[in-house]
Image 1 (cartoon, one colour):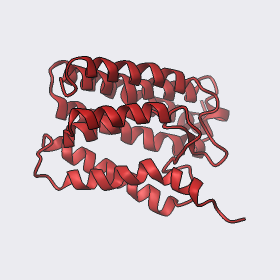
Image 2 (cartoon, helix red, strand yellow; image 1 turned 135 degrees about the horizontal axis):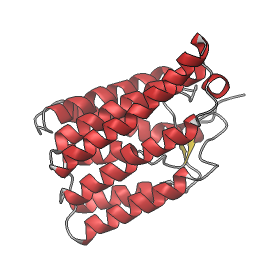
Image 3 (cartoon, helix red, strand yellow; image 1 turned 180 degrees about the vertical axis):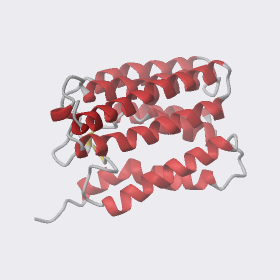
Image 4 (cartoon, helix red, strand yellow; image 1 turned 45 degrees about the vertical axis):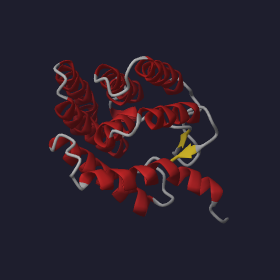
Length: 231
């Protein structure tokens, strides 16, 4: 095997570690250790953020084509972005009674449909509709513990937004505003890891960082639609 091929294959192996982090997160979820569960999900989130640029740099579609990197990424994303966060939201009792069932069904069903939609990417490498980043949403809900009604409204709105012609940026691949978007995404990751590490202490300043960065990441794409780039 050539050095080029080995490098490309190692990127697939890096992506595959997300499945291990997903299992570690699930084991913590079963023990109801929610902060540690989110620590592992944040680690998986970091891996997901760096494997794409590496895959393009080392041309995995050319030099390691025997593995489908897109499929591998989608499988792990569904585990870490959707399945485990939905389980945590339901099993933790953060949304009691029927509200928990409502959130569980909306998140899991809508997301699997969205992930299979071939129209999910736009021409500028953004996402068409909310891209199912429920790991981010649920972590913020755990950190802030908003009223049940507000949590339900957020989940319902984002579930509907998955299938609306609304743009959501990819912090790395969407070139427009990337000088702001990428630092915002890195800051969100830092605040998320810190909030989980201090067990979502309500006095932690990380919560404010989560709010600010989350608002930007959710609405930046819509902002680009409202103020299109001049030709």
